[in-house]
Image 1 (cartoon, rainbow, N blue to C red):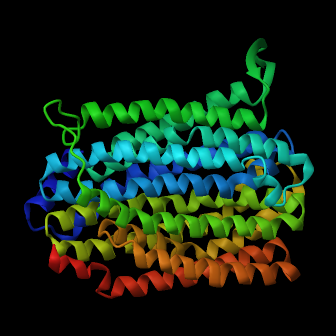
Image 2 (image 1 turned 180 degrees about the vertical axis):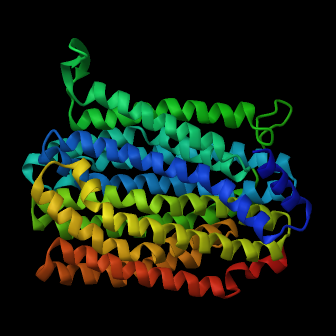
Length: 471
């Protein structure tokens, strides 16, 4: 931890750093972020696994709404981006007072934004599962699950903002540990809310485990409570304990029109990207829904299983945002270019390795989530197709983090729009007619490879940091 602090300080202070020091710093920042990302996916794994053992209808209800919950969560994440990037830049420039003022503005604006999204979600929660093509058996559970998720959005928003601020200040450890705590709490709360009261035997002694027996709704409530507890701790470490960002009583909040406009300029393309990406996922759900309950469940479980493989890429991407953002704030443009390729190369290598693991461990990963043999058979087949896309997927994920750290969010969002809507969805539609769910995932594999190539081409150019001459 001390070594990481020293290297970040050297970066901000203009000291020369060797390749190995930059690599060490990248790995040190990435590992906690990777653990945080993996723990969040394990939460989804836990929910899916527990509900999978209740029945296929319960699994399908959650799977039907997963793309919609990702959309709303993604919008909350986007609302934080414009503020966290500016915090990284100001910290890199050693203007910590401005960073704290950005933090205060972000807390207020992000909370207002999440409440607006909450209201929109509540308005559509009844009709959305029907529009998505859900069957009668799952519509009621799907609607209730989505409603509970919407009600927890302000908590989710504060979690995104607080963890993002801590990470941009260079503190990856606390968010990582707290996300692991959230994962543990999710297990505990789910056991209480999903299943009814039951008796189990441990060393021949019966033990009564209390339960509410709420099923799908219990999974949403359990996750919401885990988020609430974790967010409380996250805000405490940010607002009271962070050396750089903790609130000072003598500092008054000042709304800055320029900073707010900059936040909107950075966040709007990311929000658009989330709408594009998750909107495409929703359309994919519409393509998958007519293929039957088995395909819907296998698709949902496989998405969850694959997430474990690409979460390391998002962890490295988080580190890239911090490193690139602080490099730019410190005007270390030479180091910024080295770090951009170093982080992307590391992301490709790590996700190539995870793709190999995905291919060979696919039966085990899908087997944990569902005891249904037909779901397992179909899930293994599509996961092994997706394994070939992981390296280029890693390139796009980490390159996106590099561009965000530099404040370049518009063009990458347009690239994602082109890739998802003009390549993946048309391919998925046509291939599903002949190949079913396998065709949908083959289209996904092709699109992710194309997307990775597009992001690497942009990284090779200079346009993504053209504004640096003005900074």
